[in-house]
Length: 198
Image (cartoon, rainbow, N blue to C red; front, top):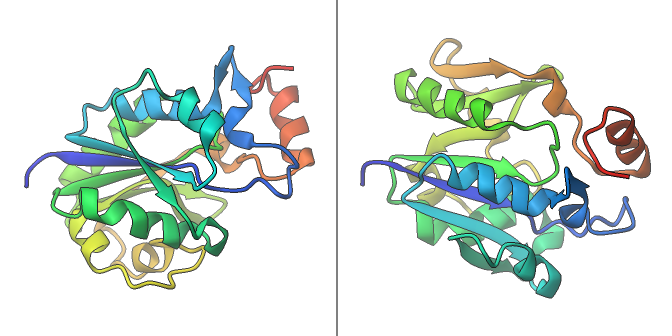
């Protein structure tokens, strides 16, 4: 099926941070709402938000946005388990934009550039270069979701992206996106940069 889907990964338990990072706010908007809104802005055919099983507050945070909410009962197993939950909804699409919910510096222009780069790349993929490693946000073929095997762990599609021939994958440099919020130190750094409200 032509077009693209989008998946927002928001099932993490935030154990190291000690509070739900999905509900941290930037400019008065929760990070979860912001990421879903930015993903929706790319006009996907389907938008899936993967949430943890007990997700009442998170569900409420995106109730005004047009998206499919998919619950991950095995969120503690990492990103791969969330991709597996999203797979049935997105695997038939040509491209799937994958976004995490904890990169407060993310802007709409980066997502648009990823989709454009994926459309021009030989592999149909584009990814963000973060501290020397290809990661999310990224665009991968929908068929990769059909190929997912249970037990991907926390790596998601990282190994498969790295295995692509150099020059066949679109690479976007975005050093600011290396700041994802996992720990209290990350949160302090985001506050100092004005990326998270006090």
